[in-house]
Length: 404
Image (tube, rainbow, N blue to C red):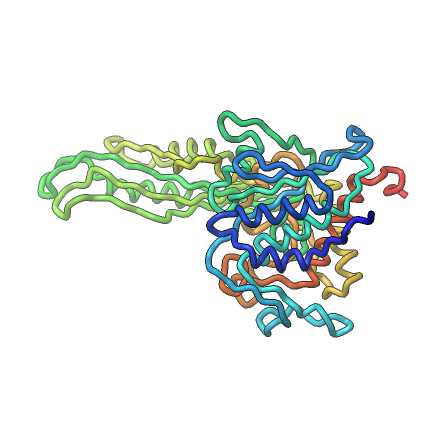
């Protein structure tokens, strides 16, 4: 009996209609049923992650490639619609004048159900000749990433269920191969003084000490080197709170900061360095404590993959070749660049990782992902699916055949 044909666009139409903003249960069931229909066994593990694996006849002769994306979406609600692109959605015209302008709109169309459809197409179409291929889908990337943290052994009491050598992460990249992303940490600088009547020359003013703390924040990266792919790190004070009465020397002040890191900075390394910097700029009679915001899973730390790595070149060249063959505009897809948002790709580092998929976080008209105008181009979903399949073949196909 011949295997049914998987159509990534038809799957995407169904997936966009399937809610996954409050619970991923229905979308997860859709994926599991799809895998089962194509004769692939899967399991639900680690707080709701879906795992499926294809083993080649020579699993030790090649790498373990993991294809990952997430099942959850966010507000706002965008109803499903398929049709020709509006003016603010147009990328260009195909040489044959047809097809390129058709889009699918809806919540999650590009983040990340379009990438999910492409990864599923590549996974289902793959027949690895060497190594292993794993599909790993996570349930809560848009919130705390508890599933991915458990899946990769980063949560207490868990172990790495993937042990991957290479990772292909589905996100909207405009069909570019994204090799790096800044990390994101959040922390609070707490200043503690001594309360007193404002009429007296007494106490220790925690709000006044914020002047020095903010100076430390402002100059924190003065001597930092730019990362070759990600540029400079960024530290931003976002919220400040302090004082209890208008006639009292305030004893407490707290400054919340947002950190966008670059390798090799870690969350703890950042916290410790900022604490030292603030301490040096604040009066001795004011206490300083810097703490990372409590969360149940690790923060996304920055990651980077060598742009010359085989994984990067395989995905980028496949995207360029496919884009040309299907008539995408010149320069659309196949570039090698950083990704503009934090993702669960962070948890896979330091293994070589590429973020790839159809759709855009934003276009010339504004935000696309997480926005009321979320859409993905139909032809790009098809191109992404073919790119993923070619990439898998290039990485896990017969070494002699691919070399030739």
